[in-house]
Image 1: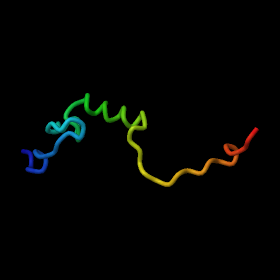
Image 2: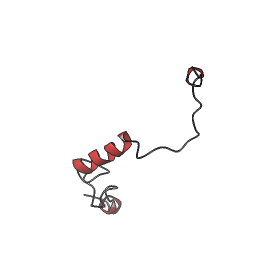
Image 3: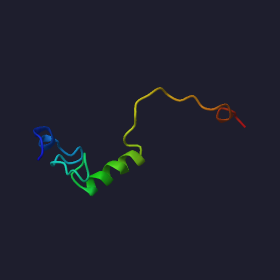
Image 4: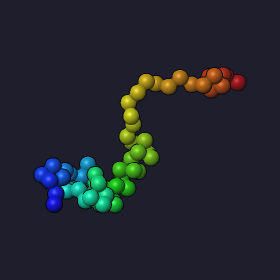
Length: 60
């Protein structure tokens, strides 16, 4: 039996109710869309700008 919190959870991609098989998504499609956004760098984790390694800042 689902608890009230589980029933109220929505898919972060489309807003439909979640499916335990694909949690937190409603389907394999929404799961794959989310993965694609991470792989295309549409999503990023905020942080400090990286400093280039010593060999990257050399001018040839």
